[in-house]
Image 1 (cartoon, rainbow, N blue to C red):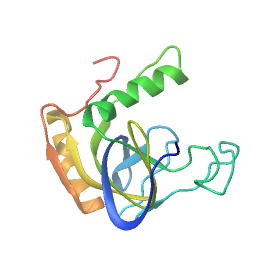
Image 2: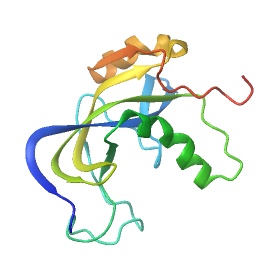
Image 3: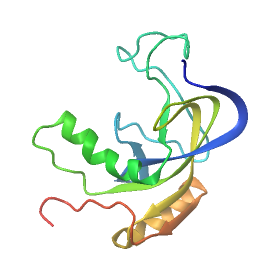
Image 4: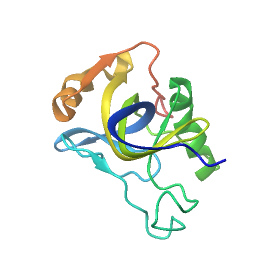
Length: 160
């Protein structure tokens, strides 16, 4: 059975983690997997990565291009350490991760644990208390709520 496919402008909400990077323009969200910056105030559009996709006729080809989100928060929280440990045997976590909800729309494919979509934009961000100083700048940059949550994902720096 193939995965359900949605063609709609009504967003599907999912959960994801981003790497939080401090830049000269202020804090920025980036993809955990590709380290691409997420654009501010406009949607991120799915693009096939060069050499990383089996076909461009998405979703008729069995590849995983798209903007991914999990169905449940706990999966998004676990993702950065799981992904980084696969890539780097001596995993050292980046100092900052942010977990939040993301809106997916356009072509959206549902999978067992989540979704992948054609277009995406952060819906709300959950920051750890130690990340409080980033809340206002992130809210301003992306135009979304940036809430302080004591249960939010925050992996400390290795020397902390």
